[in-house]
Each structure stands twice: as C-alpha cells, then as structure tokens.
Length: 368
Image (cartoon, rainbow, N blue to C red; front, side, top):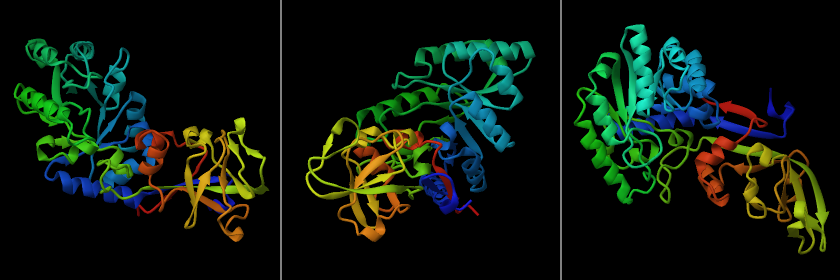
C-alpha cells in the first residue's frame, strides 16, 4: 500500500541496500575473519524477517539472537543458518533448542550442567558455545569456573564446545584501558582450549584492530547504520529515515502556551504544527522543547512536551506551502542521523532504534 493512502500518519523507511553495504564494509574491515550478524530484538526493531534473509543472501550464515523465542522464529525464516542464543538456556529449554537445531551460549556453571544432563539423558554429545566473563561482570563464567569445566571429564563427553566468546565493555572508546585488559585475559583463556573458534569483538570492537578479531566477529548496531566510532565520522551507511505528517497548523501569540505542563511559553507571533508522532511511537519524551526536525532543508524546533501520539514544532520560518496538512516532517534522515538524535535525547543509538514502535508504516526499499 502506498504511504499516501495508508492509514498511519508516520513512516519508517528501511534501506535494505544500505544494510547489505554495511555488511560488506564490515567483512572488508574484518577480512579474513568471518562476520556473523546480530539480529536480536527483531533486528534492532527493523524486522528480522526482512533483514536476516537479506544478510544471508549477502554471504552471512551465522546469526546471534538474545532469546529462545527469537531463535525459534529465526529458524523458521532461515532453515539452514547457524543460530546462536546469547541468553543460553533455562530449565525446560534444552528440548526446544535441540528440536530447532539452536546453539546455546552457556553463561554459567548452572547452564553447563543443565546442557550436560540433557546430553546424558539423550546419550549423545550436544554442541554449545561458552561465554567467558573477562571484565564486564554481566553474563559469562569467571576464569576459575572455566578451568573447572575443562577439568571435568564428563563435560567433554557430553558437550562439544564450538565457540568460546567474551564481550568488551568499552569498545566504543578505543582509548579505554579495559579493551587491552579484556583482550589479554581472553587471549590467555584461548590457550586453555584446543581447536575452538573464538570471538571477542562486536560492532565497535571490529575497529580496534585485528588483534580483537579472532575467528569470528559479531556486529549488531553497525549493520543498521549506528556509528561504531563515536566522535568520529561514521563509516556505515545510513539505514533508516523517520518521517511523520502534519495534522494541524495554528497561529499562536504570547501569552499562550504549548503542550502539557505549559512548559513552552509562546514568545511572540508564531506558527505551530502538530505532527503525528509521539513517545508512544518511540520518539522520546526527553526531546521535549529541545529536539530538532526538518521540513525539506528548513530546520525546525520541537516546542512543548512530546505527548504519546503528538509532537508540536515551530514552523514559523518555513514557507506556508511546505507546511500544509499532510506535509512530511523529517526526524531522522538526510539532516539528522540516528546517532545525532540519540545524543540529543540523552541516550544511545541502540536504545533509540529498538524503541521505534509498531505504529509506523514500515517501508522497505532496495534489497533486490
């Protein structure tokens, strides 16, 4: 359905060719290391059903998700791909994992034991990954527990470790001392294993250098246009454009106010446009009175509080023929990237992207 005739007032355009270009850029940067794709949270909110097949057609056959339900859904889309589950397993999950040919990332001794016992009951050996905590203190086995796993003969009979991985806590800050500390810890741990694949780097880690690449890298946000090099030019292609339609334009003057809480006091004669986007769509309330948008090349300011469904903007400086009801306002696009709007909102591109809601009409371009 063409957007002009659709039943929604806002549109999220997703450029599949840009995602394919970003995967190519990451492959070239990491070459000869293999490049997986992280498609958790529905491919960061952009649609795993469209993006995962695109990435597979671009040469990717290794995918990571966070949860078991994401993995089961992805298996229905990619019947022959290698699918890894970051959150590992909980009681009741092993049977589903095996049925759908999924690989759990084992994050604790409890998960190792659960996978081991299920393999024992089946009288077989099951494939899994092992996550080592090298300093993030989130998920993963501490080094002393890694040694316990390796020194337990029963585990070697029931669990075939395919991938050993860890996660960098400060990869987006290339000068942070934690990067080298974690690298050194991980390199020491790799010497305990024989003939295993190792993985440390995600999006930003890929750009720290070849020492961080090992056998596999796991980009996520960089695939979707987020900048893996904060503070530096973004090497990735922009993937999304976010637009919404003007619902109403009104003239206001002092002493009028705009929006909930009367937080914006009109300083003089001006024109205000009410636009069909709000925090219910993922346009964050923190952008109230500070956010920027564009109508063609005209920069405009958010005035008043952002509400659930609506945002008000000052269009005084914009020619009236460009501010008719139904005209588009750009919130992410040629003049403002996902990184820039996230910074303005006081958050990160990961959060902003994954919060973009389901009320947008999603338009996919390219990918053919």
